[in-house]
Image (cartoon, rainbow, N blue to C red; front, side, top):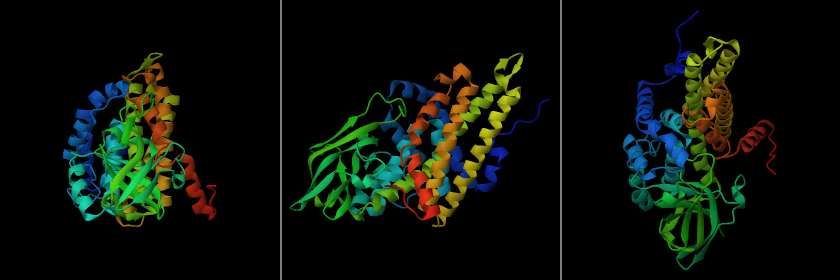
Length: 391
C-alpha cells in the first residue's frame, strides 16, 4: 500500500512557526546551495581545497555575512533568520557554514561589539560584502576547553603592544585579511586586530584533515608582533568578551548541524525508496522505516528547540545555558542521524557520490568545536545543581 510522502518540514509543520520573510531567506540560501555549492563541494572536500575568496564574495552578495548584526552594511536580520541561513548552508557542507559563522559570529561580532568606531568603519563594511575575511584566534594548542589558561601574551611597549604566542584550529586563518587575536595582558585577557602581513605574524595551513576538508584551517603564530595601540579592541576586557562571540557561533550551530542531518535524511529516504533488495525497495521494510521514523523525530525535536531558542534570542531572553543545550542537542542528534543514514546506504554510504559520509565526518568536528559536547554537558549540569564540575 502506498501513501502520500511528506517532507520533514511538512511532518512537523515547521513553516507554521516561520514568517514569510524567514521562509524566503531560507529559500534564497537553499537555492544558492543547490546551484553553486552542491555540484562542487564533494570535489573540494576530496581535494582539501576551497575557493574561499570567490565564495566569500558570493556569500556577501547573498547577504549572510554578519547578517544578524546592525549597521555597517550588515542586514540586521533576526536570530531565526540567521539560524535558518546556517541550516541551509550546512545542508551543503559544514565547512561553508563555518566560513560564515567565523566571519559573522566571531570576527565581525567581536569588532562590532568590542571595537572602536574607527575599527568598525575600517573592517565591517568590507567583511559584510565578503571583500575582507576575518578569523578568530582564541583556541591554543594546549588550551581548547580552557581558554582562560591561554599562553599567548601581549605586553606594552611605549604606545604599542608586543604579542607572542600561537593559536590552533583557526578557521579562515591563512586566507584572512584580519585576525581577532585574544591574548593575556597585565589587565587581563584582551582582543587585538592583527592584519595579515604584519611582521612576525604567520598563518600556517593545517593539512591531513579527515574532517572539514572543504574549509581553510590554520595555526596562527605570533613572534614579537608589534601592533599600534589602536589595534586593541577597547570594549573587550576579560574572558567574557570572546565567550560572548562563541555564544553567537554556538547558536548558529544549533540550527546548522540540523541542516547536515536533514541532507543525510533526505538522501537516505530517497535511497531507500529506489534501492531494491529481495524484490522490493528497502524503504518498505519495517527495520528501515523504524530507523527513518526515529531519526525524523529527533530532527523535528531539534528544530523545535532551535526555533524556540531563536525566538528567545530575538527578545533578548536567551541564556548561555540554553544555547549550550541547543548546540549540545543538535550536534549529538545530527551525528547520530548521519551515522544511521550511512548504514541505510550500505556500502554506497562511504562514497562521495552521496553526501552522507562527508556530513558524518564533518559533524565529528562540529560536535567538538565551539565547546565540546562534554563541556556543554557540564554547563547544563552546573545549571541544574548549582555546582561547577569543570575542575
